[in-house]
Image (tube, rainbow, N blue to C red; front, side, top):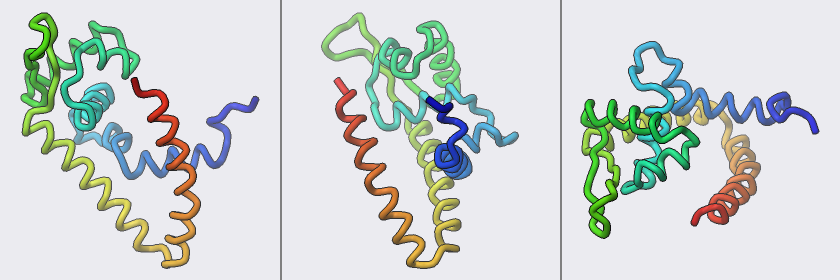
Length: 149
């Protein structure tokens, strides 16, 4: 089987995502968030209330690594630890209002970049792109739903 990273379609896909989204921010010298910090912030944006173990497992990092990243995000008031209402031994993680605002700004910036790029396409090109991406989106979302507990 060929290396998937050598496939032109995969390379184009990663390049587009990178230029529009969180990966480009990691390469931005003005960004002071690490890739792991961004990954955790984005995960909590979509899945608030996760435990430290769930974060470590989902992002495939060790528990101590996840704890260190969360500690730094908490120091910056982007994440907060909350008691679990059903189990006093557990701690749930949630974005603070500042954390939600920061992720919303990152998403807004990415959406503006996408909008600027797509505005340069003709209506027919935009329609063709949407038609081409729709089945990929459907496939990826169905796989995501199958893997969720």
